Image 1 (tube, rainbow, N blue to C red):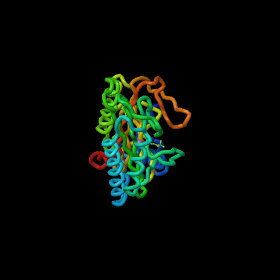
Image 2 (image 1 turned 180 degrees about the horizontal axis):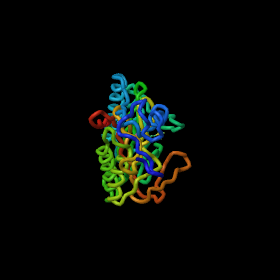
Image 3 (image 1 turned 60 degrees about the vertical axis):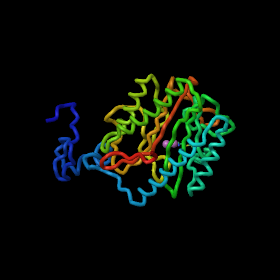
Image 4 (image 1 turned 90 degrees about the horizontal axis):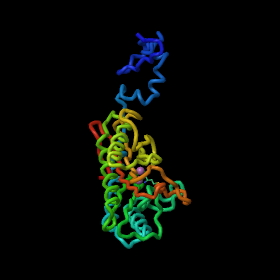
Length: 295
Ligand code: MF3
Ligand code: CO
Ligand code: CO
């Protein structure tokens, strides 16, 4: 029985079309809430919804994510004190083309370079240029390649030589945040589970989580649904279903989560000038769990 003011709960299984509607209207389900239910993300688990991916699609994602990881490994082997961030850009650009792919960031919404190099207080979208890396810097290099129309996206933050305890701490916290985020992913769980796990750890370490930029679905487009916030509440948000590909890419700050975008319209820096670090993987949701594609 539904009391006045009480909202009837959606059933746990999908009702038959000709059954009376669960809302108590007395109408048949098909004439009442069927359409609305089917349009709701919340209805997906009743249907055990999943996204069908062709073999071709799955292989396309495997290959592009493998290349993105290999590109980042190449950067890891060569990055050092004394080089410019533009040199990193050249490495990434050439390596990507040499492997038959296109750097996805180049000319993306007007972005001028083939990678993002985000130094110290830069949160993300740092544009490679004449800045020379020096001892004690931390720098995130973010790689996105487009191989045969499929996108793979991954990033790491590198410590340059001997670094401060603060620098080591923020890199470690950001890396663990990514691990905790991935560990929170369950098929038929919620996107909010990821942010909740990340936020809990970041805050326990007295760090903040950037809210302005989020992870994203990825596939034959660079950025697509769902949005993947690195903060939030367990049990909320879109349902995670098998067949989804998305990134998790927490940006973690030593001080405030607030940011400023510089005049180049890209570079996001912490408002208080304190350090920020980020790690990113592209992941794939399977029926039984999660596969990290860029590991
Ligand atoms: N690779 C970034 C991400 O993780 C996006 C960079 S877009 C750019 O989503 F235009 F700034 F390069
Ligand atoms: Co991304
Ligand atoms: Co990225």
